[in-house]
Length: 380
Image (cartoon, rainbow, N blue to C red; front, top):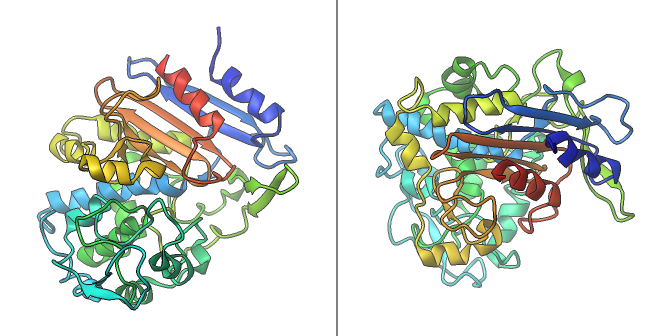
């Protein structure tokens, strides 16, 4: 009988992946199936283990969205609130006249940015399908948007001041744009809560759920479980991007709500199960339903095809609206991380699928073959 190890081992054997950890919880009351294959680095000197720690990149986004919903349930925020009282740097944003306009051809935003604009990635800043547009250059250069490099990013106040000088690509509410809104939400959480984002997430999510290996830096004394990170090299091999003593060895000045966390398969499974726990201890079913419901118009989904592959977007993650592939189940919620990670839940069945690897994605699409293979296995 084929199992998760059988699915993943060939990708280690042929050099596609140094190693991987996968978890499939079918929501049927049985223990999740977990596989750990390969090594923590390309040399294979340290074997991959179930509790290996990975840079989870954009799997941070659903966690950030959940934290915002906690503040909403606390009565400290409303989704309809404008963010200007907490984020004055973007109180009066400018917008390029057309997406292709130069940075100095701008008009005022037609209305203020709201919390819901940020949660749905429709605030006006972020990545479209065309990466050549002039308004994207300062996001990549000045704000260091892109593959996570936490030690290279300025602190929240300086980061927000820079964002306030960068024109939006679209009017608030007009289009879905990837990534930047989650970083803004991280700053919003900290300012509303009156503490740092790492402190808020630890107190309200990680500690209650027992996510002891999740945070913006590797837990003290646990670097031996931290994997190396790689990207495809020009020679067909893998080039080192980050080692255990690198970018996540110290707390960053800017804890990224878009892609800054490290975690393990079991820790992220705890977070996923919380989302599936109706009226659980951290979020009500109503809040989770808002998170996991598609918020986009058909035109906005079509404009985000490069990233969403025809699916929708809720708060912090994609939502399947069509069964285009065997793994697409309407209502399936989750996301992928650029460091080679993926996690999804299916609220209708209680299923959870998690894959953590060390190989960066080459781009938003197509999905890497190991992900597709695990998703197909979980859906079978």
